[in-house]
Image 1: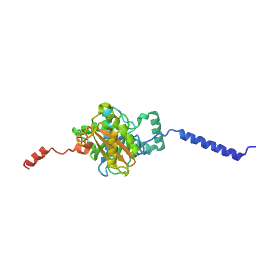
Image 2 (image 1 turned 90 degrees about the vertical axis):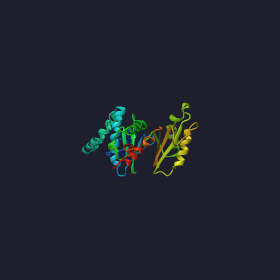
Image 3 (image 1 turned 30 degrees about the vertical axis):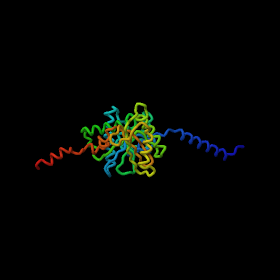
Image 4 (image 1 turned 60 degrees about the vertical axis):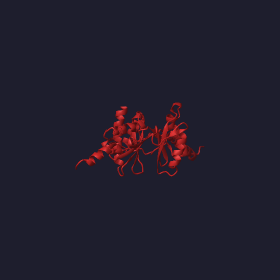
Length: 288
């Protein structure tokens, strides 16, 4: 005769095992947080744009940059921005809660390309912002186009608290191996082909909230990754390698020779350039 206790225990174990298998096989669809940020933080493999801003103006700058980025994406890539209506999503969340979340999950399943092109990441550092980007946005050409317009007098009045933009091509964990992997991936298209010999380059680093790396260590390692046949030139470079290290993540990009001409991609300086020296002299001689 079967033991009923053993039978109930076996049935319970079978149901638990079945639930575990279903959970493991279930696709975890990422959903935006209510505040429009990515709750996962910055991850290896991400690409995007760093930005600095005035103190205590982070939230305002995030909103302003999102609007500016969407405007330029529509102009440069002729794409719409589904999923970026944060106000509407917040209203749905207030009304429906779980129903609104399920609705967004289903929409993401039906149309995976509906994810926003720009997703801000909530940081615990003052004056610092990061936006993740996805295709077709290419961070370097995108930021260059934006800053070039600003240099040519296109007003960016909505971003009055935003300062410097830094595009990032690739990211990895902030380890020596991570730095080597990112350097290989980012530098190869610019330095490692036979027709690219003899390029002048410079390296600039930014290290925040990380004690593992020093500026000299990063520069030495990246210069070695550039390889032979190229020359360091800090002022008249052909290409500038930007290295950004923040906490446990690092990123890199290669920008062109007009980086300094474009005020190091600083929107505030591009929007308010210093007056010409001759104009200042003329003003000082003119009667009051």
